[in-house]
Length: 361
Image 1 (cartoon, rainbow, N blue to C red):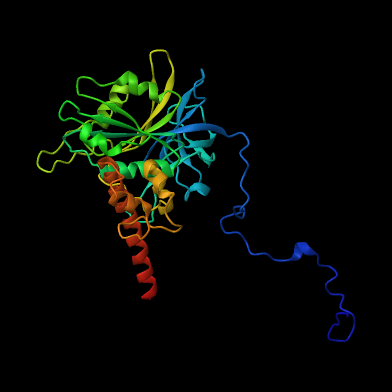
Image 2 (cartoon, rainbow, N blue to C red):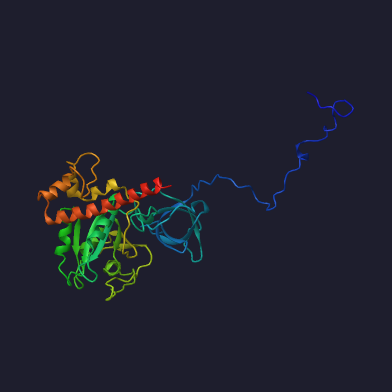
């Protein structure tokens, strides 16, 4: 087909035009168009995130070498939806000299080996990421002032084992009350326990368990967690508080999560990750099927249960319920079973509520 002019002749009026004659819409900002392609950052350095403060991240580079230094960084725009937490291994570019006033940039996170999370409560599916890449959790409780809470410790254990983290337990203020009744609740568990009085803090014993590990410290406010951290790491300077005599609650002193290096007299090191004290520890993010695994001695009995057993108080043919009724469980195991059933009932209620709200729409 040929183009014709109004007189019917072949159109030759466009022969003087080429692609440079085409008018294009001007770019008002005179900048390059956006692209989804991102630089590879092959020159990025990898460092340990030590802490987070108002959008700035402290990152240690060249850890354990003569060039070890801590720099201040921000996050790249493409990571604005990615949580960056204490313990992360971050890929950093920019000015990594550590000179005062410089600011580098985190452009990526190395795959995590573990991730400790919690939710506000058991019905809240929104996760609060606490720390990354920890391999141990030291649960700190007090024998008295404030009173120990076995149910809260159960929750810590569930969260730790769900994340693949080894739990440890230290009981402080043993000069105020005998910890034996509280510790009886955890008989039968593979749980290493340390006891600590005000004048007899087993710093060396606890420190030996920290060597070669990244250990996250957790505990109720007022149990002496910050005091223990300061004893292990004298330069930590973590604020300590007291227990309200009216409410029996501890006052929050540590307001942020921070990584601190522990070093023994021989120069061996480990990492202490101190976290703010909490009064609740929601497990809304945990798969209920994983909860039983944290109750080791009960899990062995539950192997006799029928498939799909809920292990709740009213469960039929449940080996755990039958063992309790037949006197097979000792007092400590009965207390553990009560904790397990309370947690499982919470998830059962949550599932029932979800189904009810869905059917009512």
